Length: 470
Image (cartoon, rainbow, N blue to C red; front, side, top):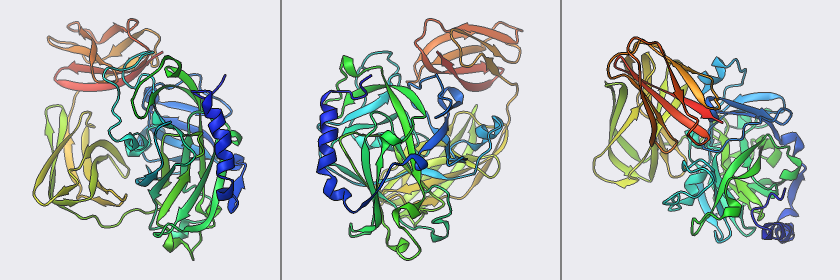
């Protein structure tokens, strides 16, 4: 199977190899096999695990967030949903991973493609109307929980292009400790890319590293729609097409970063090859500690129960280069992202914001804001506790399903119902609960394959679960 969306891409990739030879002359060339990620866990369908030795036959076709990855025999959690990993009996080394913030982008997007899981728009084997937005194409490299969405990205990035990311405030004690510090994704035709760290003047620090992704074993296959990055047109040959997913990770010491030169590191750059296809580039926030003080004045942060949700409100008195706010929730020591709200960015007057936790946990939860600046710096708000009480328990099976599901719930009463929503938030099915019954069967065979949200409204309680229809 030709992995290139167009036949011209192979020629571009070969041409790009010769174009970047001068760049690679001073780079460390790696077959990269020892640095390849050998397993991942995401939240596709609720929980999805795959590895190079046991490739999951289920092919993701929508957004899904990276929860953990295995590198050199050790499984590392990203911090996106550690409680889920624990509940599934997974052992892991705790981590705090985030996608990198973009400092600059050079080159043309004329030949580039925006890659989205083919059910990202809720349309099976076809283009969405209207097409997905390309107003800020780089958002597809930073979406999802902590920016770790494996179901969106950019493909066919030309060889004269480069992405530069913020990467500063290095923790020298963690350099060379054998724990990965950066993580790169490759989701289509494997090619060759060169990576390097730079100082604030754009001069290389340490050595460059060139990775041939043909030497990195795939961990899974997924199903994509490729949209032209300029026109956002989707052609028949580029829709619902299967590609391979690879990930590569490394310790900073591989780049010649050490205690002497680490203080000068300010950026991380990827040189494209014409066969560059990536969902995100991520960093270990325990090593690359992007946590400088932000030019934002937070007036307050409040959280309260509102019906069956927790409402969160906050105000800023001033903002300068503020990018977005991430609402985080904790039931113990780990904080998990709940929602992301785009910031105003530049303001000298009060701005008010609101977000919701649609699925509060029973009991007391702690909420806080993670405030992210344009350069990747972060700041936290104060922690606000909220007590929420709900009654009844709901579960559903089988999950995944090939047609029908059975939902277990408290005894139904008048007005109780089940609603099913597609990935775009549109209601596609609704069914009333039978009075006094404690289970409800729902036939989903008329729906397209994909991930759906099943919402139960029973006895004044709202509870939502995900189900994978395959």
